[in-house]
Amino acid sequence: MIMLCERCCAQIAESEPVVRLAHIDHARPDGTIVWRHSFLHNGGCPAPRTAAHERPDTGSWDPARGIGGLREH
Image 1 (tube, rainbow, N blue to C red):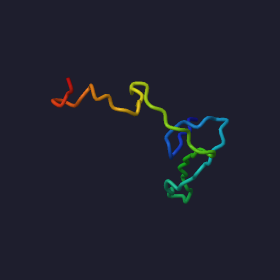
Image 2: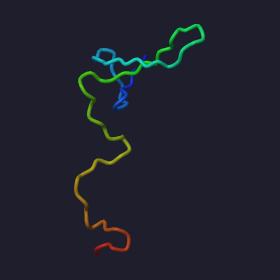
Image 3: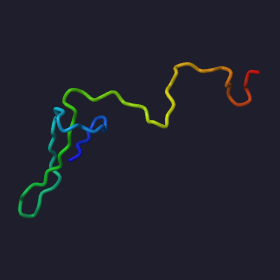
């Protein structure tokens, strides 16, 4: 079973400690309850990773690139 963290949506490994939450989904006519389970990372969520198609943020703007008609020559 694949477990996804409710906070960060990252996958939780089978060997990783996990907090398991149970919510009542609905009750059947015979009175039994159907549970909906969700999971959270126990030790904190991992740092988010950038997608493979996104360029890394270098933290500074290159003024030579300019903006539209305001380019520097």
